[in-house]
Structures are given as structure tokens and as C-alpha cells.
Image (cartoon, rainbow, N blue to C red; front, side):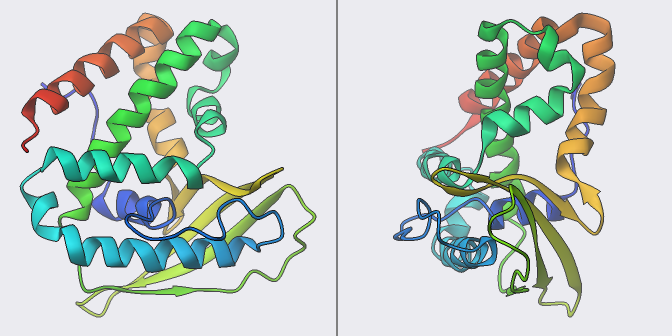
Length: 216
């Protein structure tokens, strides 16, 4: 029995478009002067190249491809902040060791979910709406539109936080649905029943199962 309800593939795909830049240079990632939309534009351009190159490998759940995907996600993403928002009040109750464990297993859980979602998306176009706000603020939103091969337009809003090294993504909303809140709602019943330690155990089981089932 699956313990987590899957999010829509579009939410995961939208998130990956903002966090992945496989096999390509990332000149904007650690530049505090770069605008939020420029960072997202770089990421979306490169992930489309990734999809074109690795579509077959993703369909076969090739382990090396998933690992390559994982290695490229972290630089665009403030995982600590996202993990804190996902756990909500339970973040304060968790020990430092539990926080680290949750971040690690949650990260691996997301990577495999992304890889699964990416299998179904190819031949799309992405429009990045230029960011018009101040770059001196600590938070910013960047809107993009995914144009599918079927003629649909999907609105994806990226929430970013400004760090000393530049902008980082911590949440994505697809057609108004926040992936952070979606996971928070999924995890809430588990946290209420077995706490952070119990959630970590379930994520660990899920992660080990996904790793043992991978190919390549």
C-alpha cells in the first residue's frame, strides 16, 4: 500500500523546470545580481535540453539518470527552507538530527517522484514572464507558462528567496496549487499519528524501495 498520495505530474514537472539544469553550465546560479526571472529562464532552458536527451532513460527508470538529476537539483533550491515549511510546527519540535534526516529522505523521495513525472513531458515550450519587482526584497515570485503539445497552457508560479549567494526556489504553485502545501497536507495525518520520527521511517522505507527498484 502506498503511504503517500501522488501529486499531479504537472506540479512535479513544474517544480523540476525550476530546479534542474543537467549537463549544462549554470553561470547565473551563484550571482546575487541576477534577477529571479533570469535564474528561472536559465533553469527552464536547460531542463528542456535534459528532457530531450534523457527521455528514454527516464522511461526505463535508469538509476544513473536519476542520480544525475539529483546532483543538479540542489543548487537551485533552498531545501532547508522548503523542509521547514512542509513540516510546519513540527519543525520546531524535531531534533537537529531529525531535521537533517527528514531533509535527506524527503529530497530522495522528491527526486524519484520528479523522474517519474518527467517521463510524460516532452515537446513543451516555456514562457518566462520577466520579473518587474525590486531585487532588494527577500522574497519574489516568477510566473511561467508551460505550453503543451496538446495546446494547453499551464501557469506555474515559482516562489524564491534571496540568499547571499543569489536567488533560490523554495516553493512552486501550478494553477494555484502549492507543492509545499500539498506535501504538508499529505504528511499532516502521519505527523499527528506517529510524529516526525515516524514520518522519517516511512520516507526511509519509500526511498530504499525506490532505490532497490531502479535500473542501470
